[in-house]
Image: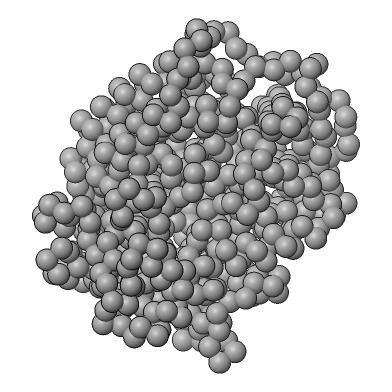
Length: 541
């Protein structure tokens, strides 16, 4: 497929005068404090000065919300080749097989290392307990606190990194843009309400900013998942890849008027059925693997069944399972359901799909190196080649760990080889044009409108007409939003989301086939033998 090019409205979101802004000089800057960013920090040589920045609190990340677990070959009856084959099968032809092998073979070590940092995994007879999730041929998903693996893993990692005396953590600090000079990443321009703008000059920078779920009306992601890293990496000149690939989780708790909550795939892994409003267990109509088919298949099946029954959701049925097991295995999901008057063991639980995990992102090699010198990346903000066109369940925390380690090691080694310098290069903010921004915009309404059209036209099903309509609408909003200079995080997030939405739509238009999570109703089949990626970077103009 041809490489795409796009030109954002501005190189930098805000104007700045280098003579009027504080300058901070560090060895390694890490942007994002999810599993990838925190694990990267633990690889940095203690001789180096490290600063980690996060736009919220360090405990707030998609990683902390992860329920299911971490996949790895820990059962003697399982083999690396099985985990690799399951990953590649789910990836629908776009996985990099050498990447898959490397990550799968590192998985047991990564999981045991987490235990050494203090993560308390659930155990049976003294051994880490393993469960099965959709697409897995063997039980290999390690979990913690029943259904709160991310929370426990992040607790252990954050406690460890807080004990690393060479690492500073800046919370409530928003990264507006990466700083570049002579086609190299030199750090970032950050903002917080106490100090305003700050130049953070870094010998090496690691991007670990997470996902983009808030681009969609229905999502499992927290409010922070606004695609900031995808946007500022693109503005800085890094290549992005497969931006059309957003994974939709099949089972999100659907209670009208409430926020959406993930119902872990592990619920189906333990034997829950999917039924429609009539009580019909329908997955046999769509796939022989029933409820444990890969997520893209289950999400489309649920959507089809909702249309057939003209009902806004389907239901998870656990009434045939042992209630004691359910209470022990899913304590947090059980408590969540109780808040809405639902008993996980007795009631059918209303669910529908929602945007869950961004598969596309900043292109990186096996070491976590991006196409922009001086910039490394790890986690959900990247496109590594592990997931391909559809992520296998519980491979996400694993990817964050593996590439966090790789990017941390690479950035550390590179920073050690660069001598100290306290002279900042000359950079201008390049704001040639603005529009009258005296009229106050309703940013919440704009973001809601954007997420609605993305859900409707760039969601589980796509076609040329819907994508073209989305382009027209996003461009309209972008013309009067992105030429303004905002002084708030909400404004910058909206500008980032508009840019990334445009990149996702362009990529979806370019992929004229259906593959994995990308389903085109006007091109319902994959192109035979095609393993091509959609790449996009700055226009040469």
